[in-house]
Image (cartoon, rainbow, N blue to C red; front, top):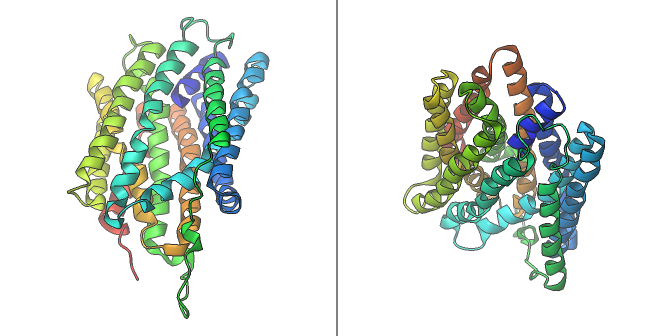
Length: 374
């Protein structure tokens, strides 16, 4: 959906590609600023109340798109996206570590990948519905903004129903891992003395940066590489091609992790993504567009796998480590602006040097940085 908003704001508000990167900055900075407060509130209020609070925050942010469209204000849209991110942060902070602990320790990476596979439906429907609704009046009619709030009104309505359901049917009280007791005489190492966590934070930062950069500028790259392709066609291609492969990668990755060690699969996929970025940068027409789409498949397992490897063997420090890993999502706020700036100066393909560097960092984490040292 962010890629659709990027292109829509560029044409409707006549802003540069670098300025459109503020869309990602507003969203992912919300994750960065809310992660630690969300962790503390979830510990104090409990899982159910924290989730419901996040849902209502999300509804409030979505409804801000109505006055944003009325006043045609880029800054109201940015505030709305920031508030939406604050609501989503509650889910990321609570659900990811929960998925790793509900079952056997060796299967943690598989469980979190499988759990995250189902959010891929939204990855497909977001660009598809957003592109079809927002661009429904044609390429020359993107300045009236009357269709822009529609996807967010639909989102807020669905989220409100979920919140009301959880109020009437609360989730069971889940004991936090932070409540584990230390044996007498046991000391806890400072959180950033765990080198595998530090590596995981760096890998998560660069993964989110790379993934957001690829998705955000897919429509720009596709329409500039193939001038016969419209914005709507590119949005549909990203939905069924890119995001379809992303979902397939999540499900198949969960299957592969039964036999392949998580760090080995992560390193392999990161290496393939780096090679695909080289093809994208070479700007070989349709071949490069296919390479860009294929990247979505190999990016699929990275976020949950890095998360599971990062919190491994941290015991009572898992909640804090989880919040820090969610904060690393801020990489998605910075990369699009940098890519847009590079694209404005040079060209869109050159901008993909940024995700190329990110995939190399993830490759290093999968080969070396994942190791837990006592």
